[in-house]
Each structure stands twice: as structure tokens, then as C-alpha cells.
Length: 308
Image (cartoon, rainbow, N blue to C red):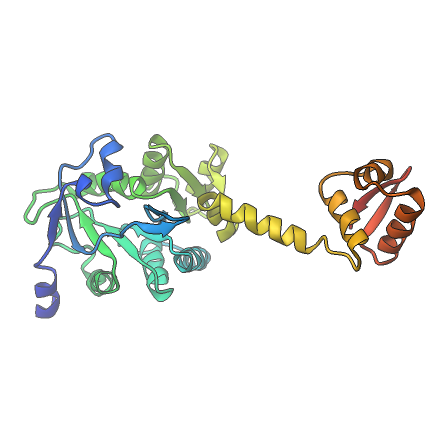
């Protein structure tokens, strides 16, 4: 480690989980950490709908030996979540973890890395520059292990996984072997009541078997970033869908618009639409015929109609 990096990571902060809004969720888990050590800055609450709320956070985890497919999926997801202000949480490891951290930074977002080593031991050492960039760009490097703490790596890395999942609102497993530490993170998430997404993959790819088994066991299949965004921001998505739906229900006249909106609300029968809009039969017939000519509606038979 260079002298510059060595000096940079000598200074750290020490708090209990309750001392920061972002980490107070750790008080609710089994085996909660007594103390946290960190470099950088903990994410702060954000203003939403006139109230300060904890920022949404998503853990992106996966194999250290990822494929190109996994890299593309992880990068795209982390980048788009970061653009929406979502905190990306991971473990600074090789493979998918580092892809998620880097994509978040390149999107101008904030990312948090949880170590399985003492706070003064960045691991892997080759990611020291990545850790430094995370801190410099407003994120944090966190560990529950004080400098000089004696650890058993095989245990400490599994223990830190409970913190990765607990700090997140959802966990996305991008690639995972049938037996891996990544699945340990998913198990912690399920025990903590967190949403778990898994990226489906080729059944012959050993690094997709863990994800495919998670899906078979009930994890939510991840197909696109909107899957996660819809989970994190259901109200925003409902408003967006309503707006898009309304934009598609505008006709060339007020009467056409009224008929389109009636169909959009679920009405199908011409009789029901006429009664609902208080329309005389001849006016409804004229309007629905024009909409059919314009390919805005289609006839279902027996004076029943649907949107195209």
C-alpha cells in the first residue's frame, strides 16, 4: 500500500448503530453490532413529500468470478438505481461487488462498502483505490471490526453479510454458485424480511445455479431495473402508470376522450358506457364508429368494446 493510501485510511470514525440514521436499522437484527467503524460519510436522510426519510438502499451482490452477462446486468442496475438516488451497498469484493460500486460512482451516486476485515485493512488490497474513491465521492467504508481485531476470515466475511442485507431495502443476487457466500447474504435478507431478487441465468452455467435455485425457492426474478424501482417506489410508479394511461386516453374531441376513459376504467358494454356518460344511442354510435376507424377501439361483438 502506498504511503498516500496508508495515511488516508489511518483516520476513521467510531459510532454505535443508533448514532446514524442510516445504520440505526441494525438495532433490529439478530447479532447486532455493538460498534461500527467507518471511513467517509454515512448517507443522510432525504426530503420526500415534505418529510425526512432514510434513503432507499439496495445491495447488489454476486460471484467473484462473474461472467460478462453478470457484469452487464450488475452495472446497468447499479447505474440506473444510483441515478434515482438509491444507495448501493455491497462488500468491495472482486467480481459483482466491485462492478456495483463502480457503476454507482460513475452514475454520480453514493455507495457503501461493508468490510469483513478490520477497518484499517482494506480487502482486497487491490481495491484500495476503489475504497478511496468511494470515500472521496461521499460514500462510506464500514466495518464492525476495530483496528487490530483478531478475526477468522471464513467467519468474519459471512458475518458481515448480515450487515449488507440489513442496511438494504432489497438484495439483488446477480450471479451465484450453488454454494457461495452470496447465498449467505440472501439467507440473511430472507431472515430479516427483506425482498430478494435473483437474476435468472443459463441452467448449465455454474454461476447461475444459485440464482436459479433462489427463484425456484420463491425469490423474485429480476428482469430489468424497473422491477427493483417499482418495489422501492410503488407510489411513484403508480402515478407514472396513471399518467401514461391517461395520455393514451385522449381523443380528438371531448366526447371521444370521455368514451376512451370509460373503456380505460374497465367498462366494456356500450349500454353501460351510454348510461355512465348519459349519451344518446346515436351520439355514442357515431363516436365509437369514429374511434374504431381511427384504430383506437375494437369491437368485441354484441355492442361490447375494448381499447386497442
